[in-house]
Length: 305
Image 1: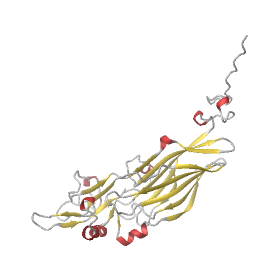
Image 2: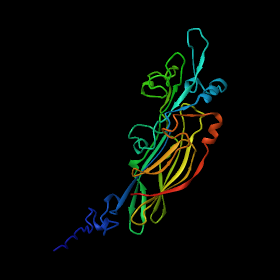
Image 3: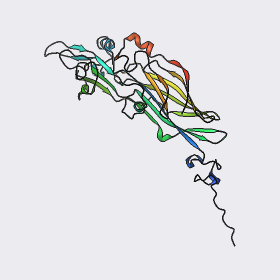
Image 4: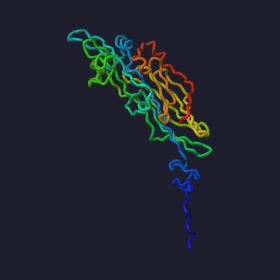
């Protein structure tokens, strides 16, 4: 009689036979060698809390003294108030994201209300003496927000601040044509070409580090200062709880937020840019140097609940 075939054994009853199970005594996820795995969704966004940015000073200089800034880029708008009259300069304002800290807005659930977005889910695979970290490739999102400019207060005609809800950019200001010196003047969909795909590395036996790098620009103003960041989100799974630590560098503008499994772990907004505090932020050429300076952030830690 031929010898009987050995029966398949699945000691931990997780659907993966012991022969192929890296953790045969502990029920786990067959996708990760049969070991227990915890998923951490990390969402990072930059955004402008104010409703708009008043760029009057910059617009006037760009339109009158810096020929590289073309009127169609939305940095200055020329129009004739009546036939035959000389052209007049009407300044424009940049639309903000008009919100406070928000996981829903940061993750894109309420539309592209951000300047940049990086999203990735880190999988922590518990192999007992070691936790291995990887990024779920299907979870990765990199995106840039839409840049829009609006004619501010055009005398004798509709301006974004004296039309619809006075003093604010609102849905009624989103007219169809652009580059016509009425209401919405310029639109750029944004590009994620310089926003890196998040990567994860092993730091210690039970610590992994997700790296967030990127550059975001205002597509309406080719020479505008960019938003730069180089941040690390470290996950420490030692013990019964997970500690998240954020460190790295970022510019002083605009606002930043990081969420792990929808829990806020890092938030920053420059003075005068917090939603509800000031309706506008006025940029002069001298202001930009102070706002767009790389700053090392003090590491921030939080234990996830």
